[in-house]
Length: 203
Image 1 (cartoon, rainbow, N blue to C red):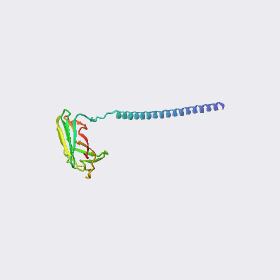
Image 2 (cartoon, rainbow, N blue to C red; image 1 turned 60 degrees about the vertical axis):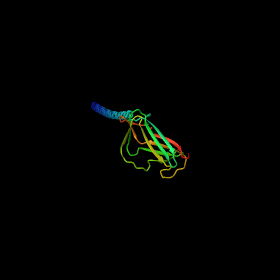
Image 3 (spheres, helix red, strand yellow; image 1 turned 90 degrees about the vertical axis):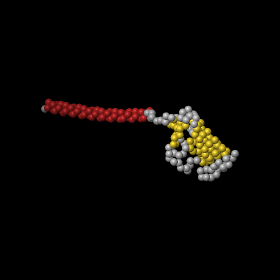
Image 4 (cartoon, rainbow, N blue to C red; image 1 turned 135 degrees about the vertical axis):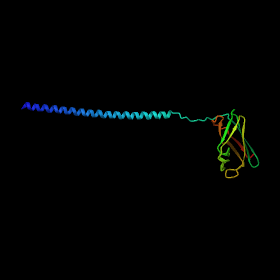
């Protein structure tokens, strides 16, 4: 009888041990499997972050192929002369090509120039082009080295509303509204087609 009891006890002990071992094995396998999945997901996320970082860096360091235009000097010699008459200021603007090469002035409308008038407080009181209509035509003028372009106009001491302005100090800025190109067709950025001169209308 006792032998039978011990035999049954041993069987139960063996079955319990096997069951426990299997459970631990399954738990370990499940844990390892979860760790493997988590590790794989972590690697995927890490790869994505690395790629985004690389792309961001490459975009930051990438130099776009822009046609940068530098300001060039010595292209023109501008001259602005003002003279007072009884009823107006005579404006005489000249620009000479001093680049040593042919220069082309390209106009996109019938407007070839503009001039602005500022009072002694540096306030804009008159703009010649304001309220004017210009034909939309393309015109090109080529100046050889030493050639000049000249414009003449007058300002009648009025603002853009037609009000007569009082005597005083005024500054007139004259600008040629053309795109400048070299003989090779390269755009030249220059501020030498602009000139400014002050005049006292009391004198």
